[in-house]
Image (cartoon, rainbow over all chains, first blue to last red; front, side, top):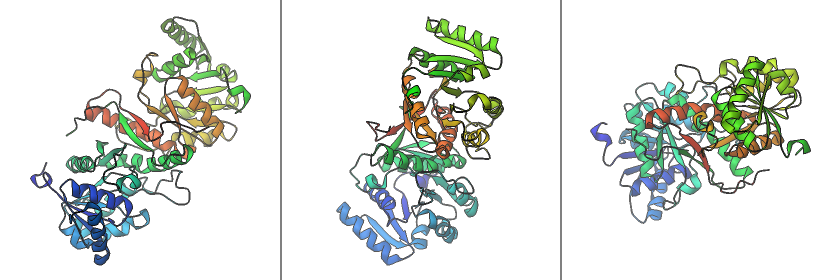
Length: 229
Length: 229
């Protein structure tokens, strides 16, 4: 792995004002990473950072305009609603050059969010990689983790993170960040496999409704000692 | 649920000469269901049944030509390779009328079986339902269960079964049969959600190779007490 991607990372969470993004941001900040919330509106990003720092009891998280935050990051995490995914990421294309982009987007199509409705390219992460080009290493992860549980940084979450992407080293970084957020990242292969994690969210929503539970998740069984590099 | 679908069922396993089908057949026979192996070649079906009965130590399973076996069944289970799925099932269309068809098919496209390659209709079970029409209740299940573990009827299997289909009662029958095979069936919604289970098999194959384990599987977390009907 590249030297710069070991140790403490500069992580920019674009969309860190939402539940999923802010939960991840807090967990990574507590794990020792330098976390910046990126938003189109710098003031909104700063306000979100202040709020998270209050929850953490320490000034660990910064806020900045997205392009600036992305430029200073080793790893960028995209946690915006599906409707904004493509425009937000392509708008940051230049700043993203050479970086790892972890896309958390779930292509839900309301109102039938418990029914799988695949996007045209089958996977919205595959579509994003195509739009951004080879210069950005898109990794898909965190689609199946309950935002509700993430936002309490002390909560133990019983859910594995399927990590897919066409660059093995980039997948390894996402797997490490999953671990630092208190989750188990699983190397799930090429970005084409992202469709499973994206579509699984609709299945989990169906299960939540049918079994009347708040946060169904998944575990991969049969790999007690993950040995992937 | 229809009265005829409680108690002991007449289950026909088409493709019961393969590893997945024969494992399920043995487990259901031991659970008290009347199981018939169906094959285009009646003699081959009878030979497969004899072999399974020897493993079971009791003459519980019969063999018959597929059309005959299907005609006498309450529930038909299709466990043939993807290449034979459509032709086998549509060839039995008349015999399948009014019945539940549990399709176990995984649309793997060799040689890249650890990479998701969705079929044209996204899900091969959705394609089959369209081909068979409303008169057959197609349910998708068992795609993620290791055939290797199934074939030993005493083996405990750490894997849930995602059950999808457009008929709730038919899903309930498949969930019950999963339980009778020693697995936990999970109501995972409409047949459109089958793509998750179908594609997940490629992810599990990738995980088996990457983590050097024989039988990765999945568990749904957060639903300790399934309450779906």
